[in-house]
Amino acid sequence: MSGHGFHVHGPHDHELEHAQQGGHGGHHDEDPASKKMTNQIAMFTAIIATVGALFGYMGGATQANAGLFKNNAAIKKTEASNQWNYFQSKSTKQSLAELARDLAPTADDKAKYQAKVDRYEKEKGDIKVVADKLEVDAKEWDHQSDEQMHQHHRWAQATTALQVSIALAAIALLTRKKWLEYAMFGAGAIGLTVGVAAAMHL
Image (cartoon, rainbow, N blue to C red; front, top):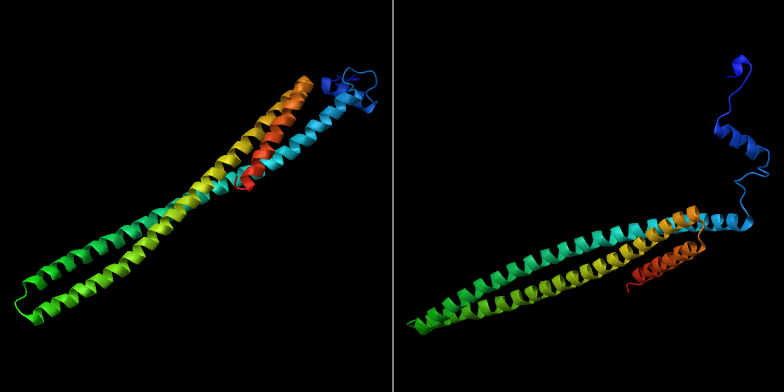
C-alpha cells in the first residue's frame, strides 16, 4: 500500500504500464497478419450484426402481416358463409312460392306467387354475386398470407445463417484458425443471399 512507502501492483496495473511503454517484447504482441485478421473479423461482425438485426425486423414484420392477412381471409369467409346462408333462405322461400303458385286455385293467385318467385330469383342472383366476390377476396387474402409466411421463413433462414456466421467469427477470433474465418465469410454470404431472395419474394 502506498501510504506505508510501497505499492502493490495488480496484474492489470502491470498490463497498463506495459501498454504505455509501447508493449515492446511482451507476449501480447500481435503480428500484422493476426492484427489484420482481428480487424477484418471485427468489421465483418459489426456489419453482419447490423444486417442481421434488419433481417430479424423484416422477419417479424412479415409474420405479423401473415397473421393479419389470414385474419382478413377468415373474416371474408365468414361474410361469404353468411351470404350463402341468406341465399339458401331465399331458395327456400322461392321453393315455397313455387309450390303455392302451383297449388293456387286462381290465375290471380298464380300471378301473385309467380311475382314472388321472380323476386326471389333476382335476389338470389344479387346475393350470389356478393358471395362469390367475398370468396374471391378470401382466397386472395389467404394467398397473400401464404406469401408473407414464405417470406418470413426466408428472413428467418437468412437471420439464422448470419447468427451462425457471428458465432464462427467469435470462434475464429479465439482460435485464430483461418478456415474458421473462411467459414464465417461463407455463412455470411449464404445469409445475405437468402436475405436478398426474401427481399425479392423468391
